[in-house]
Image (tube, rainbow, N blue to C red):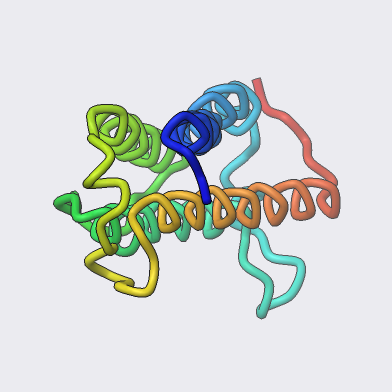
Length: 152
């Protein structure tokens, strides 16, 4: 059985991981904006998403699944164009999510997720960190496979 102190420790770790995405995207931004649009949108195979499509998918998942799964109003779930707009949209959504989660009391963390009643809000938040890891891994693989030339 998890004690109150252990639960808070676990939540802090989850919140730190959720915040990490913001830091990671901000660290990637200076490099991403220097990649020519043709390389951001290029695909090695038709079935493999382009780099910009991976970021678009992250942004849409944040708005269509993650926020509603935590009982939060979803922002516009439109597909953003341009890497800077996508990053801005994703960072804004995640910043708002983490800010709200930090205010939650124990009973909210333990309540069922509105999108997946098999998971508590805490478990759903942890699942989001796993989704982040998968996206970041996909981005790293895509960058590793590409021969990127920087403009400017």
